[in-house]
Image (tube, rainbow, N blue to C red; front, top):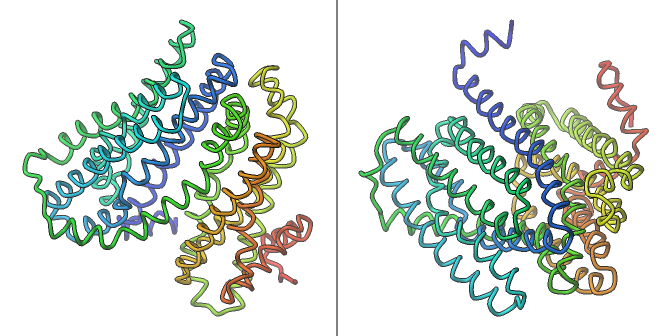
Length: 447
């Protein structure tokens, strides 16, 4: 009743809940169906060709961050503040991102020509990378997000996803080649953009009045470069291992590693769901005093780690049957890789919780520094570990660098040291479980 009354008094609150709901549906649909289809493609292509496909997607992701120019949050902020300037903002954003996308595609072609010798891998990169050219058209999504109308973006993206999923299944039935699946990756982006354009025209109106404003472009670029650098650091931190595997080992090793990654990342959407639930209470609890704030923070870390262990432990025990059931015997070497990678879930979950407090307390520069340090460490470890251990070496490098970024970096910065000890304390699953049970029963929480 109270929630219903709140929603009646605050219609914007109801719109936010609806926005979150649509975004959650988008993730669940993509995760469930996407994993199943990806597994089928991996079995069909085999480790080597699956590795080539993932190399192309990793290169696209790496250069795609640069093509975004870090503009999305800045543009959405201005659209919220001055919605009547929609035509100027959206026209300027599309112009900037289209030029950046074309430049990124040219750069991809140059890099691939200079560093990749296999002609099939080159073609995969060129096909998937073509989606960078239409990168600017994702500007429509900025308007929908700024107006808490994410359902329209979800309509477009899920329709494209479902349509291309049907295409992928058809290709599997027909026994299609690697390049056909590469075209599906690129086509999904293009179709999503076309559908977004149609929905924007129907819901909002024509875009013929869009204009480019040089002053706005300069202001945005001067504001967005820290977000761009942060995005580059994150993508290097999360994807560079796949690119380095292809160059320091081979495409087969990358295929085995990518198969394990798909399974290990199944639960990675959970921290964002937790953040949506916890962040408002984080802000409110901070006003009640340090003791209440620290107790709530400990509960958040405890819950994050307990959930992560609940995923990591059974996955480790069942890694062999999981790989053999999903991928078949040709991927048996992915078992130890999965066993290592899945424990990075602990750092992803506790890091996701810590990020909410860093935002609330204004420590985003520290967050960026920790990500950059972890990215550098990841590259260094991969250089030493991949030539000797291939995919398992990349998994160990990922595990260590995630640990530095999400947990151990807390101890190198005085304002976050207490947070670091709270994170470390939560890694005792029995103690964390006891504290959560006491909290659930509204009993006093002891250390």
